[in-house]
Length: 152
Image (cartoon, rainbow, N blue to C red; front, side, top):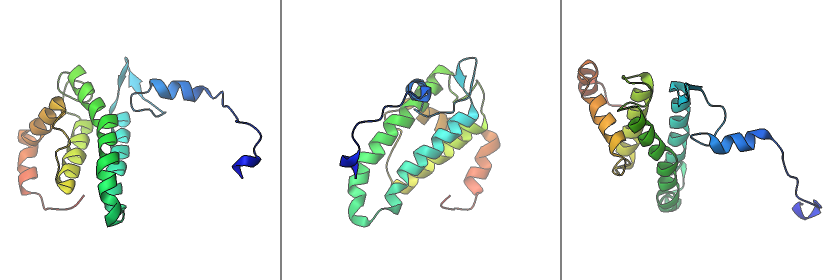
């Protein structure tokens, strides 16, 4: 079928150029004063989680390939950028105080680490610090310790 197409069709879609400049390589983005906001980060976490969870949806014999290829690529694409964002903001993913985006990132990254039984944050100290700080936040700590265990 492909051989029946006489030539490549090039797109002049302006979103292609915009996509290259986007922090997570996707459109749409939401920025305020040049910084990504909570919804953009939460969408990126969702994509990160979907990539990592391929491991659990794959056949057992395919899991080593995913661990070797998909997980490192997901770390590079998402966690590296989260780490940079946290550094730029002085310790938080958005703004200068704990937001729902921080809690969302911390929850999902730490949950995936627990499910995969690997450290995803060993090369991302700002992200690891945010996780530790969030887990030790007095208003959250009691719930974290006493909450029922779930896989979600």
